[in-house]
Amino acid sequence: MILYLKHKIMKDLNNLNDLLLSQISSLHHAEIGWQKALRQNMGKVHDPELKSLFEKSSGKSVDHAVKLEGILISLNKGIHPSENLVVRELINQANAMVMESNTPEVLEAALIASHQQMNHYKIASYGTAAAFAKTLGQYEVADILHKSLLEEKLIDEQLSKIATGKINFLAKSKLLVE
Ligand SMILES: [Fe+2]
Image 1: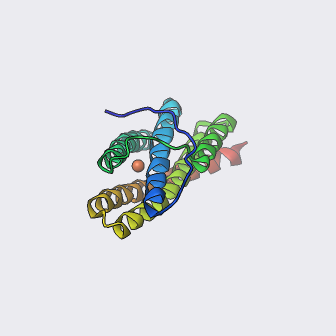
Image 2 (image 1 turned 90 degrees about the horizontal axis):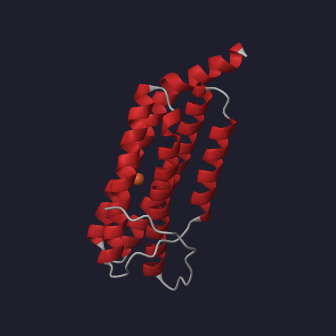
Image 3 (image 1 turned 60 degrees about the horizontal axis):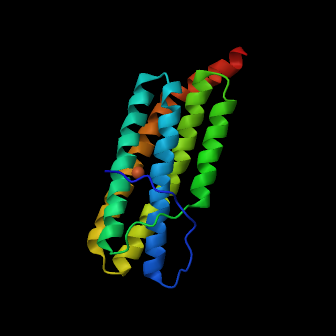
């Protein structure tokens, strides 16, 4: 079961273990925060293929968040989610782009762009966290983080395919018509 906890700014970083916990907490914020933003905007997506991929991504976010919670519990730290300012701004920017999009096609292109920006943030963060875990001898944790990283990459690739193969062209033609 997923825990929707209020994220707070984390402080007191004294060693690599603290950095690992900070990365995991930030990733938890990214997974939960983006999943909520995605659910709020899902009803505005018309393309069935894109809708299906967003549904899949939303499910993966919940799955990844549960894994992150498991890691925090296994490290005997409990769950103390930290708010990440980059994540917060990426979500704010995505919501602003959705509000400013005047056609469904532009909105879909904007949502893909926002999703991929968050994907790339998470890919970098999962990679960093996995490297920290390895250095700390937490190999099982590193494997879990690496698997989530690969799943983020797969969703990112699938979004690129839909964007460059269809949605971006539809958004472009709408602009040309107007
Ligand atoms: Fe994820």
